[in-house]
Image 1: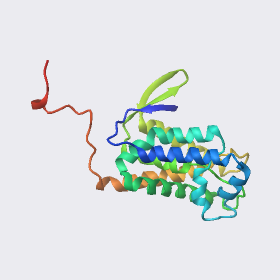
Image 2 (image 1 turned 90 degrees about the horizontal axis):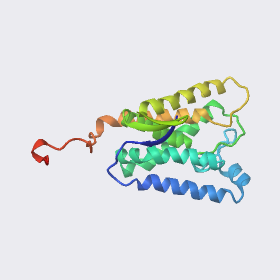
Image 3 (image 1 turned 135 degrees about the horizontal axis):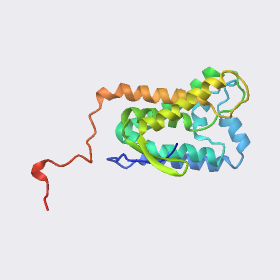
Length: 220
């Protein structure tokens, strides 16, 4: 199920989400000047554990398909999470989710000498928060030759189930997939837990589709 959009109006301009997209694109273009060196230097290699690369690795990508997939999900779902969390908390949450994701990957394969790069751990945190904040929002998804509308919990839940499945399989050994599934799992769980913990402290968001009071209705 490939998401093409969601039906979730926002009350503010997602300037931070757009800025993250621009920053990731800019760093990706810069990395192409000497990709191998950039990945070796700034990617996170568990067996070496350079603390600074816990942060820098989440802004690197391995190709056009990699960066498009990550930033498409950030574009679709990040704006509403930014709207609900607020500008002050959004970037710290994004970074913390990315760190949690990378550390989860490290815990599952601490001796690996393969560099890990990508924003998907942080974006998985966004998905975790989104499904807690907006579980019933309709998301348009492309399946084969049709676009259908399904609740966010179905789309994101299906995605997370796949991460769990492939993550468990990856622990059994065998041929590597080139994907750090446990980073996705760790980021998602972190985002969901933070969102759940924040619910009691957040006011319900006004429903922009709610009908106006009867006294204010215009009749024709």
